[in-house]
Image: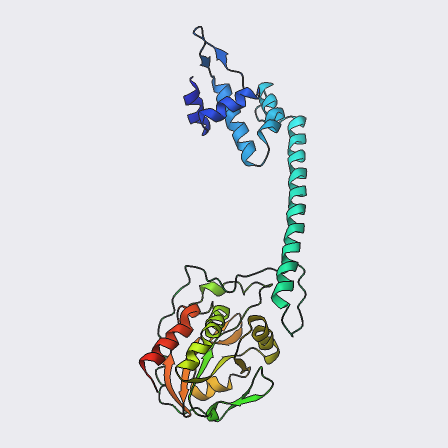
Length: 318
């Protein structure tokens, strides 16, 4: 058969067939006119070399396997030399894995050091940690739908409640003072040296707490320019955990901790359960003179939410 037919049957290019021949892995017969005449045996040898190469065995090291076939064995790995070839490839792979693991450990340490360099909170142990790209949202996140869980909130008076803040004080939400206040509730923030909970991205509206906080940070001055007196993030995570986030992200506003979901109970704020843990759904309250003036719910995408709030404020001046 011609070289093009061998290449077709083996699933390679004619250039690959010529390369195998240059290495002496196949030796086609010659016709009277000088053209190469490839047999079924050469076609199988090319297929075997290709499959072994796909397993990570260099083409040059497939010779023991092909010689096994040439000796009449049914399978290319029926010979002791073939088994030795497998062991050699496994040893090479183990060395590569070891080198890559060591390189990954160095990168994790660098990430860990950089992430917590400016944080006052204690650094968690980094060994063996995995990492989520907290500020980069996957392109296929499910979009949350409005389930009506916030329809009752506009016009409601904020209940008498004080919550601990990352500024080492308590904040009375019912007595925030003049001007508009923004309180955005979110489920939880991750850390850069640890993965988010498995399945987190599949929950509509769950992913994006860090990017949402960064958007409020980046537009904090813009919000102040349109009359926002104060911004707060609010979650059920404790204050110690929230302080690490405020420090690491250099947020110009405080986070409020509501571990007991007191505000959710008083106002009927939407929550959800994940992995046996109750969490706040993402919702933002615009509070003015102790009354909920406006509600953003559902929120998507979270990394653009501060700009969404800013546009509403610009369209609805106080």
